[in-house]
Image (cartoon, rainbow, N blue to C red; front, side, top):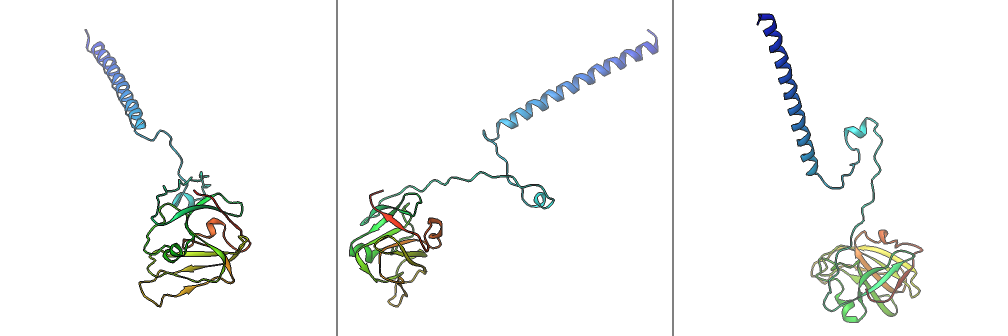
Length: 203
């Protein structure tokens, strides 16, 4: 075999070898890609554009609202519960303070609402009773409603230590119902001027 023929044979063999190497690398890369994809969530989603990407004029992505599952309710010793709704809003569940003892205790010494939206105070007659935050560590908002469930007024209440001079909070006029919720939560329930409260039934 001449030197020229031998060189041609070696070149063809090297080309075949290179082709096989390329095929093997491609197959290995494909397998790695599939394996990596299997580690990702079953239902991938798009994240909204933030930071530099948003600054260059990229159109923001539409995000799907997140449905929040309410926390599980647990009984609170000494209290029942009651359903209520504001205007045409959803039916919600609150702790019920109906007796004098329950109303005097309220949310004192509590750090949570045990899965309830708030505490509803129900009085048998119109009243001007004021509220205070002695020994109540949770910041609260309170709204008062008359005997027909019509909104009277509302305010925010600040936690107060165990002392006799805690400030008191009163309604703008006589009321029949008072709803306490975590501070700032009244707006999300639709509570405000013109709103009406309907309550009754157990949760």
